[in-house]
Image 1 (spheres, rainbow, N blue to C red):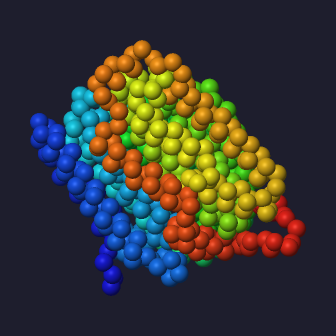
Image 2: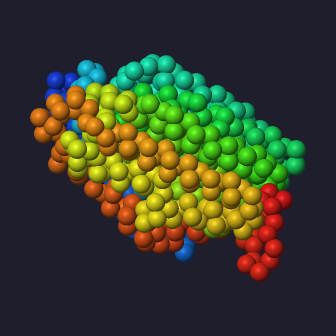
Length: 509
């Protein structure tokens, strides 16, 4: 290696920080908070360094680090990033410091160890960076599974109502998906030349039937993680029970591993099966868009409502992936980032509201805008970003997905467009019931305490709002990085973009 090992250090640094924070005295919670925040800022700085060193028009995979790990299995500690992985790692590096700052009092309210809480957040950051940076398939699988552990404890130990049920359900669903992947991983190793090297496996020659089974093994694991309908039921429970900061990482980053896995592993490793099962991916995505939106409309709990909106949003990402056009694929990856920003902001603001009211029920917040105008205004901005209002970053990604899909499958694009209308319904109704109307009498206590947006909370939301607006008008810094990686993935699948003058064809055919 002639370069600084950014990916190795980026992956290891949060784990080192987690161990250090965990060893701090329990009777000094402020020290643990400051140490965790400082360490996450260092990781953010490393992430900025990684971004500046990446060359959008350079090699597909860059910043490669590799060490022998288990030679008998051909497994290595191999890290490398393309544009897709890079933008997700950048999202993680940005969100974690903001989540730590937003979660300043969460652990104390749960009456559990403060150092352990922030150590778990840093440990989670380590596994999230590792899963996106891994280029060895077995290493990816290890991070994929280990990632469950810190999130399980964040939900089960520091969550709200029904936290144990939600934590166990989250763990079991993800573990079940991991078992499907493990079975496919063994088959991949046996039939792919007894190696876990991604590049070698991309060039392996599998029979059509073998590809089908291996594809399904990976796809089920990723569909559960994403989560696609009908594997989605763990998300509303986990998102509703988790602390707001952990929920922001769960919905903003963790479940993106599913869609990332489809792009990185299902499509390049099993191109024929990917095209053959495109109808399945599109069907599950479309059902998720409509179902998630309809169920979100009827939710009474703010955190569960936001979780269901994410199921609908993931449907758009799925459509973008299985449309097999560069435009739709770029939109899907961009949606992964923008959804993390918008829904991360929405979850954090919901957490601020819940912390003040002591309840997540929509009916407990009537007229909150008159008593907390600044916080209510930010809630409104987050909601508008979630419904992909033009001028916000999710609109750009949603538009790319739909226009890229329309060129190959008009029916899918038209059905998906219905989700935009439903999104306006559930978001605007949520905002109306929460911030408008006659103020709830119990909110008067909040006004008397002067508990509108604090300086700390302003520092949390300001970068997210700025990025949502900036990328809404100027997404080029991201699309320049994402486009080459998506084009390479489409080439792996053997798909080319349709010409504007040529009639459209059905996706997957």
